Image (cartoon, rainbow, N blue to C red; front, side, top):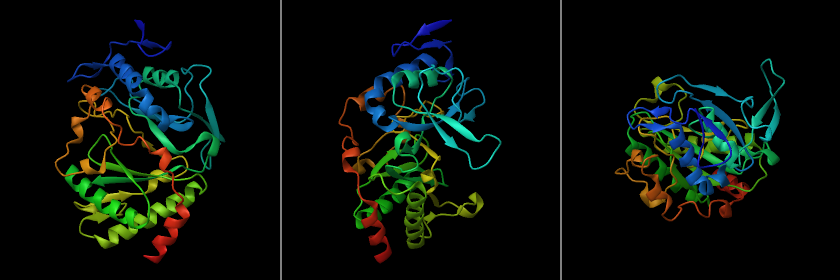
Length: 299
């Protein structure tokens, strides 16, 4: 069976296929969700390099990652060719986001979450944000919220405005919009210095240990989403988790121990979408990283 979504001219194969068995959410439900939020989603995927996580059977089956543009994408799908530093392939043709057609075509191929790089295709490899990934080893969102507030305090002292969002899982992401200029390596180096400084100040709560066993119950501060072709789930991305949670932009005032990130999901997100966007001035808040680097050295 083929059916057009309410979204575009892309035809969905098996639109009634159940992706979330407990909630009975289908592939068509996912496509229509991305249609409904696309005006909010678009700024974070526009001209952005994507890595695909394909889960053709939703929660029930296996998933695989794909960087090369699939043959099943529309012929006019934009791509960015990037040379590979290792492997058999000399280069990879990454899908570039920004159109509703591209997004629905990805859903048709079983892509539930949207994984975006920090750089846009036209400025690669120079990011326009810094991303901090906060992963609580305890599995408790309250621990991630505490870590995020500590991170905000440090970023505030460095003169950087930051924006939090749920990861759609158990953790939090904190983004800092920046002016294009520093390379991905420079941005990664800055993020690594920030999390190292923070973990050293709060060693019982926070860690930068790569080894999962060495983390204990602390919150892992991950700076590595800032690598040139590394990715993070975008704001408004649905996750392949029970009940289809959505990675949701937050006001800092919402980052509390009592927040349940699972409350933002595919089934009820319409109420959130109709409110005030906490990140409405995200890209109008681009900052110069040079001054923050100097402040970090002096602190």
